[in-house]
Figure 1 (spheres, rainbow, N blue to C red):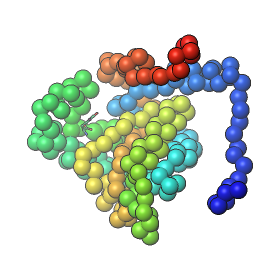
Figure 2: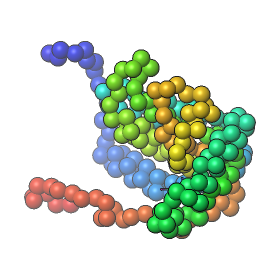
Figure 3: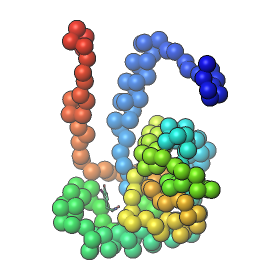
Figure 4: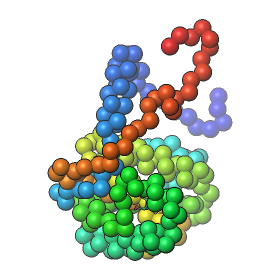
Amino acid sequence: MHDHPTRQLNFERKDEDIMLQTAQRLADNLSTRRSVRAFSSEPIPLDVVRHAIRAAAQSPSGANKQPWTFVLITDPEIKQKIRDAAEAEERTFYEERAPQRWLDDLKPFGTNATKPHLTEAPALIAVFAQNQGENKEQHYYVKESVGLATGVLIATLHLSGLATLTHTPSPMNFLHQVLNRPNHERAFLLLPVGYPKEDCEVPDIQRKSTEQFLVEHHASSTKP
Ligand code: IYR
């Protein structure tokens, strides 16, 4: 007996061959995900985005507080306001604030203060983290929780056939003002969403190989 209410877990047990096939296919598919900076302005099915946001909101969170808000924007006027404010911030970043080492690290991406994707992409999702609840309830592991949800969002959008850019203009407080968010929220990430422009090119960069990021420990009798 528990001292808290419980209910039956809804869990589907799968055959091992299906498990392996599923994991392999998802990993292969996700290996084609790239951050896209050149978007077609072709409209996208917004219900796909809404389902992806719903998928994101199923992520685990500290004490199940679900400390996230997703703002979906297609209004061209709001996109323009966001672009203007983001570009103003980025100009000071590229011209004044960024240390040379950071600018050097960004060279392979060819980024600069001009952010056409913010008006060209048909949709923007602004992700907000709730520092605390609406009525000042305590929230826990807020950045971790919102980061997890954002990962699920990006993966779901990709697997559904939409490209994204993980964009973190810094500082991003302008999003709070432009989108008129309440005090307990702060901007976490801005995600342009859409189809890539025809003949879209991406930086020629590589991902690490599995042995570079996976460390395993097993009982010595366990053979790989
Ligand atoms: N926020 C700037 C700079 C920038 C920083 C990192 I770390 C990136 O991975 C990419 C860009 C910009 O958006 O241009």
